[in-house]
Length: 311
Image (cartoon, rainbow, N blue to C red; front, side):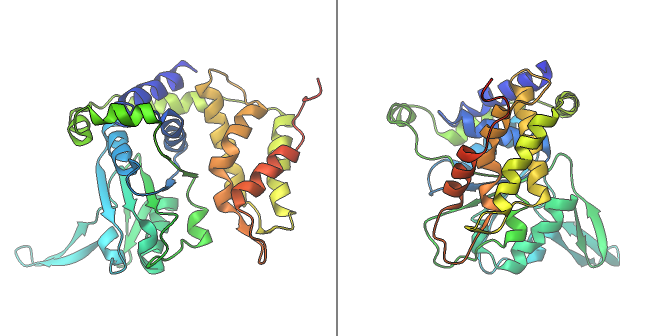
């Protein structure tokens, strides 16, 4: 599992030059990237979400596009349009910002549901369709959406179908006091990002994913994972539990976590570490229940028996 560890360490070191003390979140983004998933960053303004995603894009040597979502943003503003080229006397397709390796959908919940849904095909199928014509997207491809969990005025909550397509929901949170003090005396983050080199390439990505595919899982650990999933489907506080897509997402995340730890097999601890980033945003809380999905998932996690825990 050396390739996966080297892959992760390079990105952590590179992005860590811009964002201080957030290695855990960066590591989770790397897991999403290796799994081919997408990230929803939910946090207050000014915590460094955009800077971190820019640094990540630089680290993987990919094209980066930022889209500021607003109520008047149209689906064609994301996907692109056909325009009439008078010189060529024909219609030509002009690609939208979704044609990039790393797409930052900033304040994604400020766009209308129609525009939000324009991302669904791109996120799931790695392609977009315009005027009946299908265009494949670049590889690798990752969408990173951000939203402010506090301010709800003028926002449109993401539909459950789109939330389910985000591999993880993460939060940066505030820096530690010492880290924020250190931030005051250094260069501007934009200048640091401009000088960041690409530390991995397509060959590194393929090698890492090849190692991840070799990670195995025992029947007992599979059963433990399914116990957690099924507990969300039979819980009175939850109207709609985790889907099969969520099951596969948790399995993929645990497999990558195992590879990062230098193992070629999954242990229950790998699953437990990935449950909260991967599952709570997929839960639909039952009407009348005011509990936070994260708290519900924590309770399920604490009540589910871990294999061999009494050995």
